[in-house]
Image (cartoon, rainbow, N blue to C red; front, side):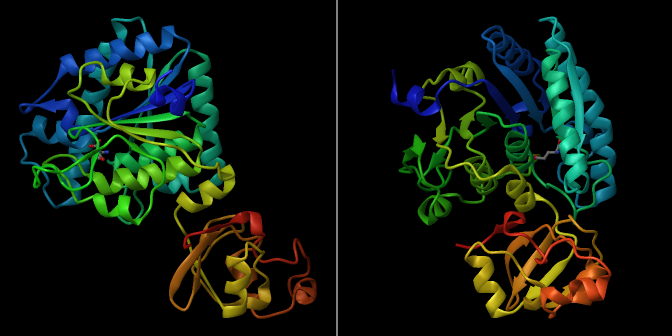
Length: 372
Ligand code: GLU
């Protein structure tokens, strides 16, 4: 067995992310490319594998259809373009899969909905049910209604979050670049290709420049961030060029195509969600509490200095010390309750609030560290 096949193992569930630059060729949507993806996905399914697609292209296709130049800065025109482009995009995917008798489903995600735990869990139920019924889920961000501040922002991140949430074994990111190089190959002829990354350290992060294109929003940086999300989910990730013949099928089969980022130890799912969800508030803590949090202990009310924002219990907040966000957490109490018990000993909680759920403001299992 090849080293790549061994590292990948048996891929049961795979997410394939397709970037705008792969879909739009010479100024037009490449139907051949979409047909080829559908063809390969169909073959993977015949082998008993489940496939989800994260597709970009709504904004790019919409701008083209409306005859607007790429990357206009104003949000309204991008959002209008997304709503025009998304339906064209889905129509085309649907046609490509119909040739194989495969039904597709559209899922449009928003960061604020994902940041609500019940809604995030609901997404899982929908995806499981679609896969059980042999439907291919096709996912994009709901660009038409998202506001900049609360956005996944790029589909590299979105696809990694989808892979993490759905417990996928592999994420394949198809791009206009064939993988990771030690420097930007578009600027440096001698850039060396990296076939496998086993640890995402500072050296690897430094290799990711700001490669971008006219229509897409991603670059190597967002792909490395996606690889870190996958790593924590125990999911492998491959970046491969969409122009490599049969790239989807071949990466899943373990051929030496693209750069493989080998998964790491799996972080519990709830903690992964906390880390990736939108923070609806801020809790500033003192040095003693910071030490406890960094030692993977719970956060007690006594260590809280300030509570900002309005949030319900269970919502995600930033945990801040000396002005730096050190962790994110999902508190056992609301912002109002936390403000009332901040700086107080846990024995006083019941007297102040009239009830006590936990002695801790945030349980250790509901804290995800961002530093170290
Ligand atoms: N959601 C965007 C679109 O469909 C693409 C984001 C990205 O390029 O990563 O146009």
